[in-house]
Image (cartoon, rainbow, N blue to C red; front, side, top):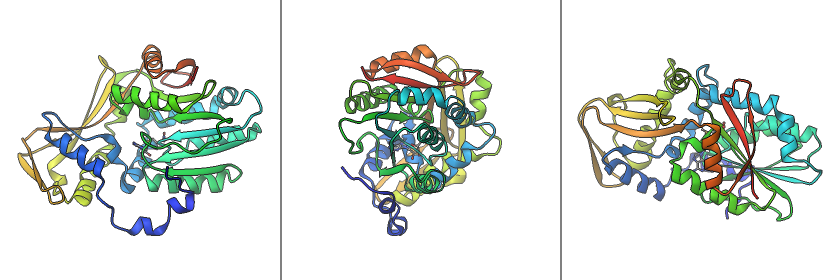
Length: 333
Ligand SMILES: C[S@@+](CC[C@H](N)C(=O)[O-])C[C@H]1O[C@@H](n2cnc3c(N)ncnc32)[C@H](O)[C@@H]1O
């Protein structure tokens, strides 16, 4: 298991050296762009530029999920503290796909202020996100030990003492980006790392007025469109592809029937895209789409079904006043 401390994770050499070709990316791109309905998994959004664009998305007025989740972490902090540390023992807080830590620092501050001895393990594929998180904690909460682990949360887990309580966190409605079989697979993997009495805090976006949902993925500022198109820039750079970014458009839709918001890139013309690294071409009809992201919206019932399939029991749904979003407390029993 590779364990990088903050300084190693963010060494300048890593930021400047050419990115090696990622075998998982090659597999995903070849299978995704060869499928009848072309698709690209959303984890590839987060190169440095993708992480920067996501930071912009989080502060856009229409992108309510980050704002509302943050509101819960601040306003309902005491409820979360009671679940995380009902007694005086030490806690390992493990956040998967932590991003820049804007929201988590509030929860860690509440835990620290309540006198909970805490180590924070932050896992993310993005070096940029981990760098931002590290700087934030250094300035805002230097008392808490932060262990940054760069890698895939399907494969990595921090080294922790067996006797300490573990509280895993999967916030930002990240779970909604995974196809259902993968979401259940990830919950089962997390469950297998926890012992009885440990917890998973799962951030889930709840079903609401479809217009509010759609606006979050279809902002007038066009930042989500840039974020979506950046995926093609990344493939151009890392796989030697020649996507023409002016020949693709962002398209988002939301279906209240299945509760899924979906983002696509639409090819505006018939075209063939080549990859020198893969020695492959991919043909696009005019109007053909690449499915790039699913953002599932839940009900309390569907969260409970998902939790049960992953081997957890729902202990509590901690929501905002409008019930737009829930940080659901899942117990490992
Ligand atoms: C939607 S952002 C959410 C960030 C943060 N949790 C928040 O709520 O603000 C998703 C984050 O997960 C990371 N990520 C996506 N897929 C990942 C994977 N397979 N393993 C580790 N991190 C991943 C991305 O780099 C990004 O920082």
